[in-house]
Amino acid sequence: MTLEPQEILEPAQQRQLASSLFNRVWDLLDVGDSRTPEQTAEMIDAAHASRYLWRQLGGQEQAVIGEWQISRAYASAGLGAEAVRHAELSEQLLGDGLDCSDWIPASVHEGMARALLAAGDHTAARALAASAVVALDRISDPEDRALIASQLAELNLD
Image (cartoon, rainbow, N blue to C red; front, side):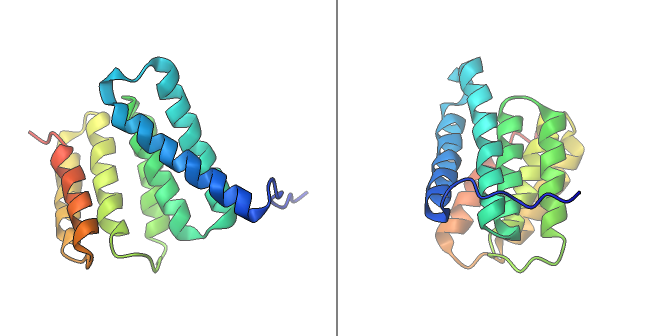
């Protein structure tokens, strides 16, 4: 028996909800170490819900970004194994010959480096961060490049 995806909301409503959930995750990531356990759970739930909604509406690029954000949420929560699992999913989706925005490969590498750090693998994290730095040169928009460079600078790779 094959189940087709079920439309939950009208596409415009779903797009708005997916976007709101994505932004809520960023708000909770920005809270950092002062986030409560309840807020951490909300952050992870919102990341999964956003990815679910975007996956129905969008394409593979949205799936890559969704998995990246879930990985980021898990890394921020200190759940390294889950962070790595979702970073790997993001890499797999990217590696399927995806024609995407030029900033996404650098972001995916940064996300894997962050996940590996959360999992305690500093050596592999440094290698992925180096890949992200190389990918920065391929980003045409200076603001996109600066954003990902700042995310890389957050990583404690010592």
